[in-house]
Image (cartoon, rainbow, N blue to C red; front, side, top):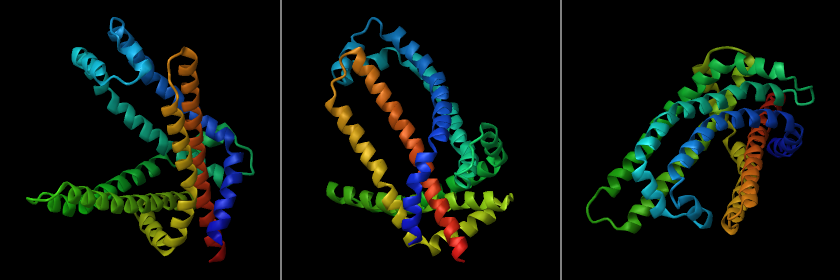
Length: 288
């Protein structure tokens, strides 16, 4: 019952979170512009005497794209070498916003003040960075343990392609289950750090792990209910993208706008998921 209440509640929360979704979207959009504008200028300067842009409007031409990369590889290499720091920036931004998101979902009926949102983002930032780092380490260890056996199994002589595909698929499925469970532990550890307002990250991870495994069935149920919407959006976008022939400026702009809408919806769904888990967390506390 708590799981169903939490899932239903998350829709009203998502509807009331349009402003915070827009704030986060604009922050990501501004950072993305800093990356895409230099790349666009580089691409235009390199391909201005190439047929690649015209070819790509009709369909992806691997040969033309390969020629461009081969002929201008050094220029692209310089750009991509500087891309890794920006990946870290995006990761840190995602971690930064958790404090503000949790502050909002813990009091969704209040007034969202931008200053308060930023204060909560910065107040919990370093604790959440430490938490994210520890969870990355745990995920790496789990992935290593999961894939050691499949690698040994497919490394034997005489194995068929079917056997390799089946073995790898089973490994990926098991890894996916652990990945989602680890992310659940991270989510509830953030709630604990926020509510208790302490800095004992490892202790909170242990408390969260015990909590998640105690309620694993219900948490997986509401996760599976929630994941339906993102999957539907992905399918819709894939159908639209594969059925559209992008051959005019209007369609290019339309596709760009459609992509931005999907990014905004992705952020909104992220807030919905956090609100769903937080509601379940509070309901369990009330019941206990």
